[in-house]
Image (tube, rainbow over all chains, first blue to last red; front, side, top):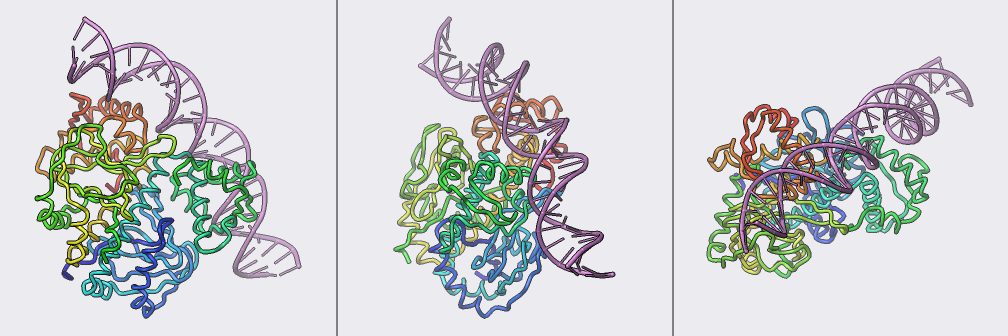
Length: 234
Length: 234
DNA sequence: CGGAACATTGACCCATGTCAAGTGTCGTGG
DNA sequence: CCACGACACTTGACATGGGTCAATGTTCCG
C-alpha cells in the first residue's frame, strides 16, 4: 500500500446518518486534534481543484463552500461544510474541488502523510473511510435528484428544510435558520440564479411560510407546508 | 467490525480512471467468478431502493439503469452500468437506488456476507473499496456540474462524448455510438424531457454533427465541434 | 396485417434566465 | 455622528429555453 495516495474526494457529515461519521471523527481526532490550526478569511481559498493534496482539514468554526467551475465561469457548489466536517480528500493525490471560506473559518490541519499511515495500519479506519464515502455519495445523489428534477420553489424549500433538520440534530431551533452564505452561493448550489433565489424567498414570505428578519436569517413559520412544497421524498 | 453491514451505494467504472477500479475488480473476481449467474429481462428490476442488501452484482452483459424516484413519479437516473461494472453496495444494509435492466442483462451474484467477510480480513481490499467510492463520488459530482449548470445542448453533447470516450477506452470506434437506453432514460439521466432530448438530437443532425441511422445508433461526424458545444471542462 | 411502444415534430406557454434599476446594510473615514 | 462607497439583495420588465400537450411517424413483433 502507501505507494498509492489515499485518493478520495472530500467527505463530511451530510443530512444522512451522523452516527458512523461521528465514530469516524473520533478516530481522526487522535491525530487531528494535534494538527495545526489555520485561519481562513472570508472568500479565501483553502485549496483549489487540481492542487496536490497536502493536508486534510477539519473545520473548527465557520463554513466552507466546495465547488467546481466550468471554463466559462459557471460554478456549481457541491456542498457546504460546517464545523466538525472534514474536507480535502482528493483522488490521485489531487483535490477534486475548490474550497472557499464563506465566512472567516478556522480549520485544523492533518498532514496527508499521517492519515495515509494511520489508514494503512488500521483496517478498521480504512473501512470506516469507505463507509463514510458511501454515505457522502448517497447525499450527493440526493442533491442530484433535487437539481435534476425539482422546480425552483421545491429546491429552495428543500434547502431550507435541510438546514432545519441540521439544526434539529444539533439540538438547535429547527425553525430559526442562519444562512451564512450569499444568494450567489445558494444559487450555484441549487442550480438557480441569485434573482430566482431571491424571488423565491419573497414568494415564501408572501405565502406566510417564512420571515426574513435579515437576508441571512430565516424563520420557518410552517414546516409542514414547506415540506409539501419541497415535493416529496426528503 | 462485521456486526456493521458493509454499507455503501453502488460503485463502478466511470469515465474516470479505470485503473484502480480494474485492480479492485480483479480482487473481486476471485469471489465473483464463482458467483451464480442470473438473467434479468429488459425492464425488470434487479433490486429496489430500500430493499435489504443481499447481493452485490457484477454485470457480465447488458446495461442497467440506476435511478431514484420522487413521490410524484419524477425519476432521476443516476448512472448507467455496463459490463464489468459492479452494483449493489448500499448504506446501512439497504440499497440506495433502484436497478433496472435497460436490455436483457446477465449478472454474477456475490453474497454480501462473503464480501463483508473478505473486506474484514483484508485491509487492502477495504482501502480499495474506499478509493473506488471516492472516484465514483467524483464522477457523480461531474454529472451534477452538468445537470446543474449546462443547457440542453451542452448536456446532450457531453452525454454523447462520454460514450465516445468509453468506446475509445474499450478500443472501439469513438465515432460510432450505440445507445441501448430509451429517450426517456436519457432524459431522466440529463434532467430533460424526451421531447427535448429528441429535438436536440435532430438539431445536431441538422448541424451535420451527428447521424442517426437508427434512433439508438449515433455516428459522431465532428467530435471537436461537439466538444465545443459541450461547454468546456469535460 | 395490426397494435404497442417508442420517437419525432409542431404549437403553445410558462418558469426561469437576463438585463437593468433601485434599495438596504455595513464598514470606513471625515 | 454622519457621509460615503461598496456590496449584497430585491424588484421589475422582458426574453427565451425548455416543458406540456397533442398529433404523426417509425419500428418491431406477434
